[in-house]
Image 1 (cartoon, one colour):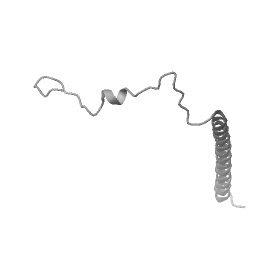
Image 2 (tube, rainbow, N blue to C red):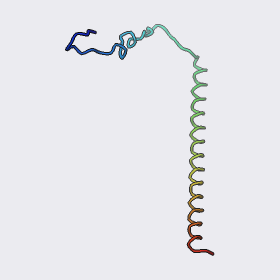
Image 3 (cartoon, rainbow, N blue to C red):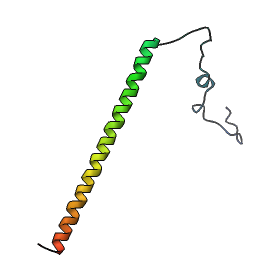
Image 4 (cartoon, rainbow, N blue to C red):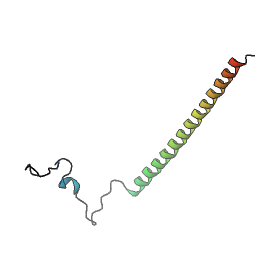
Length: 86
């Protein structure tokens, strides 16, 4: 990086060779944090969590649509009764 006039300078904090080249384990090394059983348990737990969350979000959106429908029913009923009183 040079500060000579006419030469474009680049910000050194945007990229750095040592940050882009991370050490990779060799194929002979087997680095695992969890055993196969533990990983299977974690994956199943994650999928179960995702399914439950999707179901809860679906139920919440359904209740929200029902509430909006009831609000519209009461709004139009009130509007109708204000124009044509009983």
